[in-house]
Image 1 (tube, helix red, strand yellow):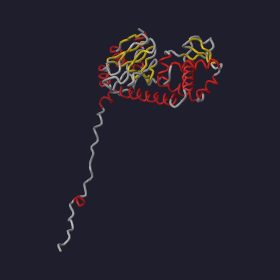
Image 2 (spheres, helix red, strand yellow; image 1 turned 120 degrees about the horizontal axis):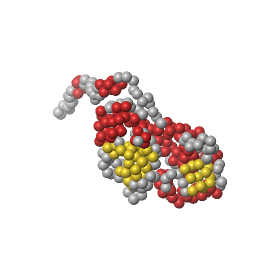
Image 3 (tube, helix red, strand yellow; image 1 turned 120 degrees about the vertical axis):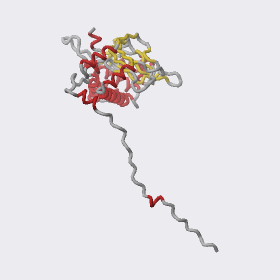
Length: 294
C-alpha cells in the first residue's frame, strides 16, 4: 500500500489531492525480471510511467544489428513517449525493476483535463535535456579509460550522497555497477573486453579493489580523478544537478484559484501575419524602349 501511495511521486507531489487520487486510480504496479522488454522499438507507445525500483535501459538497434544504449532510467525517472505514437527506442529492464505504469492515452487525457500538468511535463523535458547534455559532456570524445573512470566516480558520489542505512557505520568508498558488463560497454560506447581490461588495470595500479563483478572499492580517489580528466567539483556538480531533477518537488498545493485561472485561460491563437502594402508603382510594368527602324 505504501509503495502504491508513492507511485508517480513526480506528479503527485506537485498537484492537489483530487488529481493525485485520479493518477492513483489510473496507475498499476508492474514487475519485470532482468532483460524483459517493456516496449519494443517501433511498437505503438501504449504506456508511460515511473521507475519505482531498479534500472531501465533505452536502446536503439543499429542497421548492422548492434544495440546501443542511449540512456538509463533510474529510480524516480519518467519513461515512455508522450509526443510519439511509436517508440523510437526499445525500453528494457537492465536489472529487476518495479514500474508504475499508466495507459498513455488515459494519461494524455488527464493532462488535457488538468492543464497545470503542462508545466510539470515541461520541467520533465528540461531535466531530460540537461541529463542528455551531461552525458555528452562526460562521455563524448574521451578515451575508454576516461569514460570508465568517470562512470565509477559518478557511482561513488551517488553512493555517498544517498542516506546511509546505519549512520553509526563509516561511509565506504564503494562504486556500484548494477548493470551487466555488456550493458555498461554499450552505454559507454566500447566493448566488454575493454571494460574488463580497464578495471583490471585500475586494480593492478592500486586505484581500486575489485570486491565482485558489480562492486569496487575506490582506494585512491585522487588518481582515479586524474584518469577521468575531470575535477571533483565538476563531477559533484553533475551529481547535484541529477539529484535536483529527481527531488524537484514544488509546493503540494497551488495558490487558491490557480487551477481555475489556468483552465479559464484561452489558448493563444496563432499569430496573424499582416503583410505591408506593396509599392504598386514598383510592380507596374515599365515601357520597353525599342530602337527606331532604319
